Amino acid sequence: MNPKLQWEVYYSHPPSAVWRALTDPAALAEWLQPEEDVMDYRILEAVEQRSVSYSWITRGCDAVVTFELRAVDGGTKLRLQMDERKAIEARMHLALEWLRSYLERAVVDPSGHTLVFVAAQESRRS
Image 1 (spheres, rainbow, N blue to C red):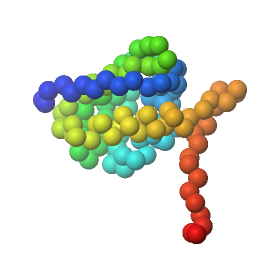
Image 2 (image 1 turned 90 degrees about the vertical axis):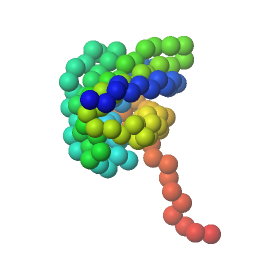
Image 3 (image 1 turned 60 degrees about the horizontal axis):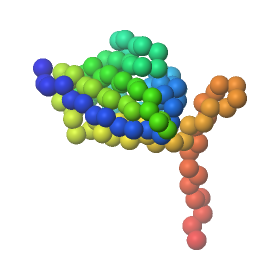
């Protein structure tokens, strides 16, 4: 087995928003969309708004990926740990940026539904 890999990032969003992005199937489909080769992921263990571990399988990866959340002033500190069975270290930072992008566009409406806004693309050429 390859060594455990670890990243730590800060998101200026509350742990509840980060948790939703990590565990809601619709949210996962939204921010994992750029990773077209994600073939299978399933939750192995979860502690509400504290940590979630996935079995994560892609064409280039077979790993257990664990996200740990910690509330900090103004947001959430997220630690991502990956116990690899097949190496993909160079691509993991992309997943963290996709999550950041999703969180920046996601808004929860009063009914509790998550709305994700996609930047409008210019349809006309000048």
